[in-house]
Length: 122
Image (tube, rainbow, N blue to C red; front, side, top):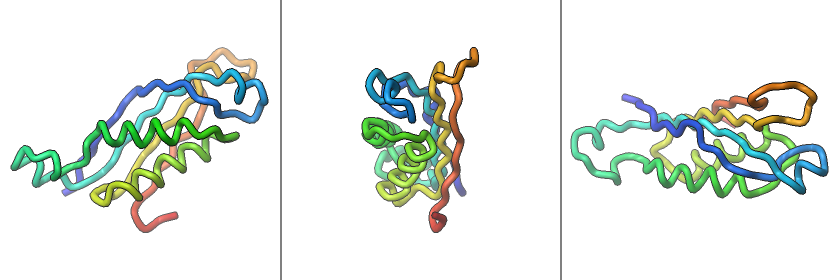
């Protein structure tokens, strides 16, 4: 049985963007992450080692966000790959990455991408 570990509304400052100013000044990004995994043993035993720590997932996301990129697609893909690589219990990952107040002349809360990666897919 697969269940989900959810991190919702993570807000991090990072230096991603095509424009030079974005990479100098940075911007705030909002990240939602869902990781599917089998939690049946953790549900029965209350043992952390039987699941994936959401604190560890956060550290993975934070580390990948610290690496500047031009495209949010690239950042989201890196985060998903890192989670699948680092946590063998993870079966799939959904990442929603939004840049707050993007420089595109529109009044919006954010713009970005949502990607889903599963074990065995590229």
